[in-house]
Length: 195
Image (cartoon, rainbow, N blue to C red):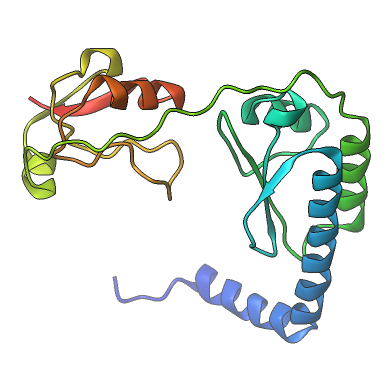
């Protein structure tokens, strides 16, 4: 359709109002608050990763939590993370976050009980042999199978734990036991393979 979406246009008008009302000042203030929270995480013993000013990615393994465990702990305290896997938990912020959000997070971090550190390492992503081009694999007939049954099969569609992510295998590559360990580790239970 060539008709405009009036909801989208109204949203853009509203965004212009927000941007013209000290939004960048609020953005800078929020980035400083996020930096302060990163320092609290580090002092508590979390490994803090990344340089993005409005995102916090932490590894809670040193405190005895998987990324999933820590996300559950946050959720139990009414804080929802953006992403989690076995090793990491990610939180994202915006100028729409209230001061109480930051205070609450600091309070929750101050009382989290430490447990014995988790020392299990994630499996290394293997280098796989290419059997077909990405195009040929993607357009081939495919079937969805349990990942445990995929040794010797050719991947036909990407399977990622959370886009954007580094793929364990690319369509057209031959699946190995090492690749299956990675899929399982990252919670991928089924994959699409060339039929």
